[in-house]
Image (cartoon, rainbow, N blue to C red; front, side, top):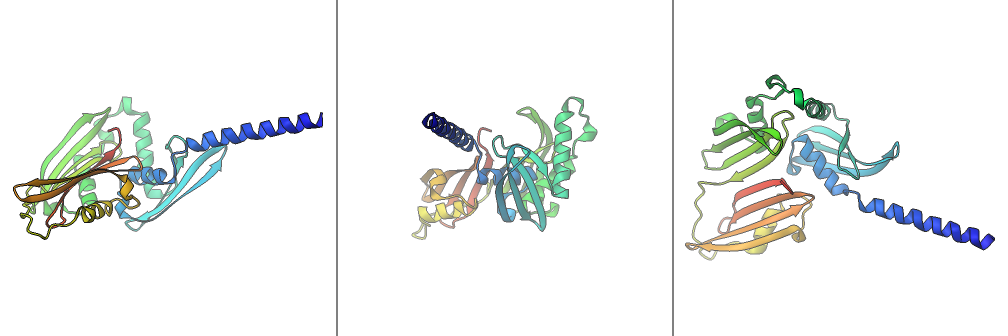
Length: 263
């Protein structure tokens, strides 16, 4: 009888252990939680000074408590460890943005133009992300569109240096949904022995995605055209896809595109 009880206890422990392992395998991971928090805030990972993600439990829910500092402000997001859903926002500034998002999502069927951010707000959001001001750019496009089940502002502008920026910004939350950058008017110089190496080009690309490693570069090619060398590639890191083109002579990033995987 005693041996049977011990055996039953061991089986129970193994079952519970197996359940715990299966549950752990479904977690999105600390790095993904960090990315989700930063993207939800409308910022970029490169603007973040410090960031931490601690796995904790409350009321039976496992979640990541993500805290970071960006642009002089503190942010804290609680991210569901399994679904990636933002369950709570503690920063006053971030909470206001998240509350607006929640309200607009729940009342989307009753939305009116007055509930949306203005096109001017969308422009300012894009300019802030690009690190520019209105006097430095010329706007080529500012229009409201409907894409993938949501209304977005398509904001496009370019600089006197021929760099082109194209943003899709959620019309209700102000969140940057998609961002593209191209040095459209940039003229490369023919390679003359001073071409940067492929390894250097990869290093330059990875420097734009803190935390990413060589293994996260999923595609990398060297192109030669009319004596010019270009490096093109794709980085996939924490559910975000980054595609780039780098001039082989100067190391200038000619194009940079970022969007969530599956978009």
